[in-house]
Length: 204
Image (tube, rainbow, N blue to C red; front, side, top):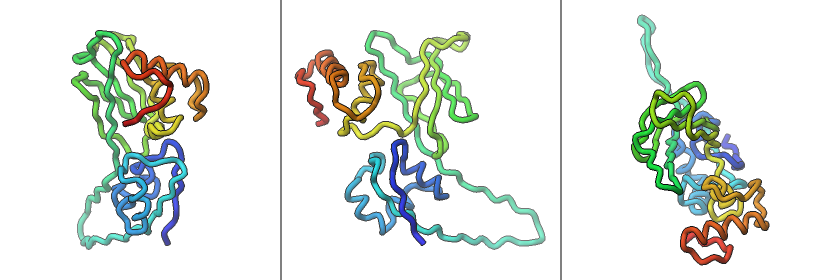
């Protein structure tokens, strides 16, 4: 019978679907029992910790196979799309540089050309990104450990704390507390981007 899943930080619909054995997140999102959830979260990429989602029963699929020969059965594993847009506060241009993206045991080495986009396992929770000017450099110029799906919505304090930290405006620990350090980081961001410096978040 159907069960209920409570969203925690780091959850995405792709991860939840993989956790419960579904190939597509849409199977869960568009299930009739989740009509209220869809109304509350019309963007499936934005779900909040504490949300509850109904996990439907899986439908059994049968395929007739002859017993007088060998068969190859391919199982489609669920994936999610990882997009990374590298921005610089200086005049540094990174297009044409090399990057190495490691997700689990899989490593990809390619040239940066706009937004870095890759299909990764839906169950992936972290990745490692390294940037080099060219493939001959042993030591990366920049590198990051990425927590996939761990950004809370922008409307939450923890959501804009994490984003400010990612942009180099130090909020300290992402603790969902709009304290002095968070206020200072937000005011600095507003000042440097020609916004009204009032320490108030405007997501419009």
